[in-house]
Amino acid sequence: MSIQLRGGYTTEDPRLDALPNYDEKSRMYGITKLVGDTRPLVTKTYTSRSWLNQRREGACVSFSFHQEAGSYPYAVPNLTDALARERYFDMQREDPWQGGAYPGATPQYEGTDVLTGAKVMSRLGHFKSYHWAFGIDEALLAIIYSGPVIFGIPWLDSMMSPRPNGTLDTTGSQAGRHAIMARGVNVPKNGYCTVGFPNGKQVRIKTSVPLVRFRNSWINVKRTPEGKYVVDGWDWGIMGECLIPADELQRLLTGGQGECCVPTERTFPPK
Image (cartoon, rainbow, N blue to C red; front, side, top):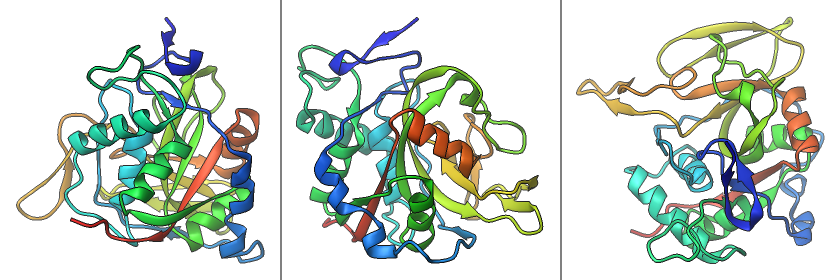
């Protein structure tokens, strides 16, 4: 059953509520101005100690930006689900659509967009600027040479549950539109990628193209007294993460009006 979102958009799953909203001026802020377009592809992963869970609610835009904020090179500590939800309301108050999910909003609808999310997080002091990657080649370079990024892409029903090795199946029908943080790129060597996950699991995947590592906001994780991070009752993928081949991600970007936002000049926000 379709769920009505703001702006006349719909979704099959309440967690998939990233709305499309583009500004032609974004074309002036391509990430290649900062990272170039000829640097080599190398394997790179950024440590992240932020696992957030939006549960069955919307707010994937805010949660993905807070996942990024909790990742290196500037990992903000003590980020919570409640904070991400509160800032989701801030984003809704600023975006182009009427109403929202916050108390007192009329009409009551879920959803916001990546562009407004970037504006709000920048104003709050998480980064001084943001750029855009246009296409998968630029997105790979952005992750490797700048840091974690936020994708806004169509999310297919086949992507709801990753395979046992963490890869996504992108052959299904669109269920909605999702915002999700990417924190790494694995470049194949001799036709394989070996990828390690935060729970210690390691997978070896046959591939001729790089793999992009997503961290989703659909998982509960707690820290043990020994300092380890373990799943706390609610898991998705491999400890909240999944992998997607670069060529399949490119199809989602180009075929479904996808976007890739690159936070730049990262900072620690004022307390």
